[in-house]
Length: 339
Image 1 (cartoon, one colour):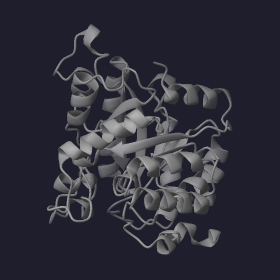
Image 2 (tube, rainbow, N blue to C red):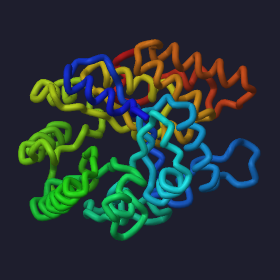
Image 3 (cartoon, rainbow, N blue to C red):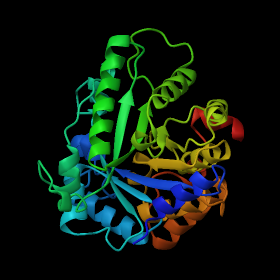
């Protein structure tokens, strides 16, 4: 089955301004959020949170709907759905696995890892992602996912940041030798050790410096990073128009926030978006993604998509978590000036 991701990456390689957009659902929260990862249960449920089984059931449904290009999962979830169930064999959706879990995404309840400078770490191995075993035979490497997300967080500390980059280099070399593709997530500094006057420029400069040392076979397919606003996005794209830049979704926010973020990022050069909490906390995840896709493809404007989403909820008798009028407001400070 030809994957939509591969088709879109080929179009972008031929024309970096091609009007295509890569949309991913980040269902890897169990590698960071623990018991809270599956998200809130429906109103009236005995327990406030969904189960891991329910979380995985939503993944199956979303893949079947086919409106995303990538489903990002933990290694454990991918083993079940990709290797055991063969969920993606007849789907245009590409399975992907979070390939590392740096300490700044360890969001255990009552812990404070996120307040400490990020340290590189990998629970999953490439072999386990590819075949579910500690060492894959050549013919087994196609059983699982062949795409991973690797994340780095730089904190303006030469020793810590060098350690982070050394771990990424080791991962890249291993990935290339095992024909494992990856995309690179670059977070904003989570606990900078020295003041950073311009965080957006610091992240942009770190990205281009890092990529300049990587030859074609070892480069990430695309980037995932925070959206810092139009100027930062345009600066990165102006520097190298061949970069496929993707944004991360961040906190849940309003439904309008999610649609507006995607719209604005694409407007200024982004060609991918990976939304986790924004999707996972939606009242109807499949409908939410369908409206995200409509915005990404230029079929709906953000406010129209928000209204259409709430009309869908009402037609299905699904209770909205927010008043539709409030949910149609922009609350993200980066987006407030768009009106």
